[in-house]
Image (cartoon, rainbow, N blue to C red; front, side, top):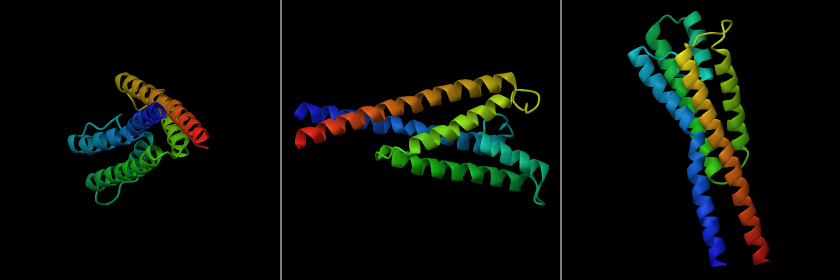
Length: 165
């Protein structure tokens, strides 16, 4: 019985550490936007939602100009980080529903990013597009790994409960 608890504890610790993979894309996005705006090299590193927001703001600038646009873009990235942090926390605590929600949003972001290379939507250079592609595939793989770890953890928990009854 002690070995089973140890297996469960190890699986739980591994799952909780891997749950952080859901938080990293939003954190990377926030850092890229914060430094990108201040260094004027933001192009191609923001998540799709912020790219759409920045494109809208650029087409409809406010009276205060670029500073207001930068603050609004950075603020929206901060909101995404906070929401993602909350969903990651729920995931680490054993809730399953945030996993498909965050994965679906990231898949939509990936689909939008793929479209950004083509002339109709094209805003990304080939180098930035390849970086986006590799990054998204890496994180989607980590998200998939989290689903496998959740299933293993659930199986160990059911096994433990069955033995205790």
